[in-house]
Figure 1 (cartoon, rainbow, N blue to C red):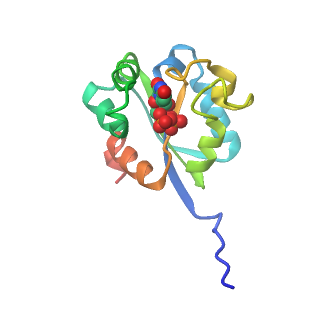
Figure 2: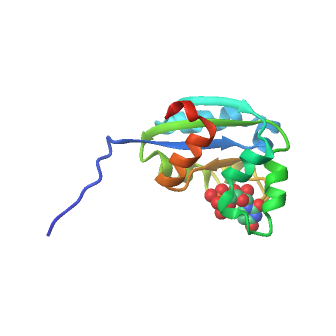
Figure 3: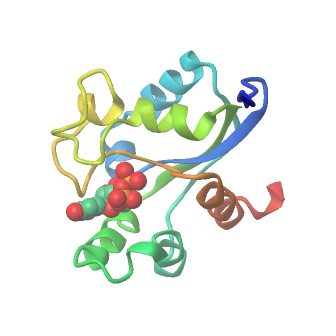
Length: 145
Ligand code: UDP
């Protein structure tokens, strides 16, 4: 039988957003500290307010969902912090730190589990696949190539 092992030394990049609720509540430092403590490195970072166009591009896969309008209103409603985190299996590693999408179901000890109660205001975003990460990093940090 052929055994294929993942190489843990191969680095991966993921796009992380500290959403406007996280910036408003002052948990930017906590999010960065958690991901650095885990072993991920911040390789790009910016504070910015998204245009509706960028927000709609970022959440394009949710365009037909009933919450899309509110999601775009919320994500464009104040400054957010966008960053690129890098490390072995960074995509999965950050999503584990973030916790479940619904903060009430997110385990205590995760970012959402510790800081949020409402699904619409769940503090952070993390790319969910290598394809999404590549697309989202290009949208936020085109200069990274
Ligand atoms: N969302 C929402 N209502 C829902 C489902 C999702 O407002 O019923 C928002 C929520 O902020 C979530 C985002 O839409 O983070 C994207 O949803 P997704 O299922 O991709 O969750 P994520 O990958 O962020 O955990």
